[in-house]
Length: 152
Image (cartoon, rainbow, N blue to C red; front, side):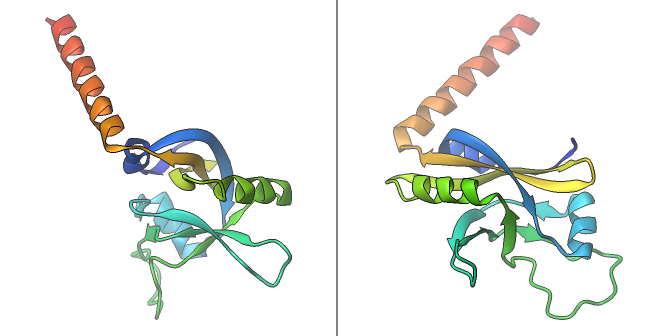
């Protein structure tokens, strides 16, 4: 499963509680662009928008997919447009309940290919405090120093 994009900020800013997988609805040229690596999850998030259906639809917001460079001229293309996530009704209900709990949010982690489909891995997460982030930085620095010492 080749990884197309990773949201590195998500694991630094959030404590990951559960991971989930969803399909993405993309246009044809967006699929080609994503497979060529022109996709970014920086600053993206997942919300629920009410639709004509009974359940609100989960949507990926603020993810950037550049226009495919070999596509013919597509007018009025918005690289930050909202993209629908493909989840089962049971999962949608569960995630909506969890998201309504205080301090929990849905954060996209990575986009990858599975067989011929493009999938999004996202997490139910809780925001980290500033002191938690400092501890993570300190731990990473210590691990890096240990590796350096072992190489010598």
